[in-house]
Length: 134
Image 1 (cartoon, helix red, strand yellow):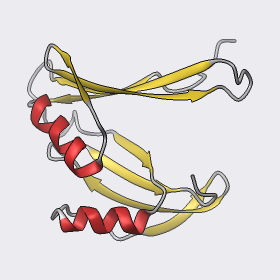
Image 2: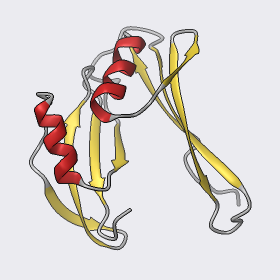
Image 3: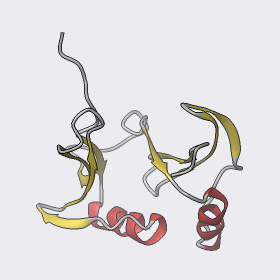
């Protein structure tokens, strides 16, 4: 039986991709690049554990919405791995970004640390500091 081997991409639909991509660059430090057709993206590269010689990648893209966005469209959450959650949160708060209190909870290796926020269009973001570090 075929199975999923990873995430090929995360696509965020936006009513103003340029403005939202700018927020992701400025606030979260994600260097999204302009691709054309009002689309912004970044490719994150990594290696397969079973085939270390194979280079893989995941795309994060912000692209124009096909129709009017509403709360039914904004029901996903993207989890970003961070290396120092407290420092990252302090940086967000300095930029006047509303961030939930840091909490602890189980992850694959033990107890990780988490917080949540929303981007300007209401998309949910989770920041995660793994229990084993980066």
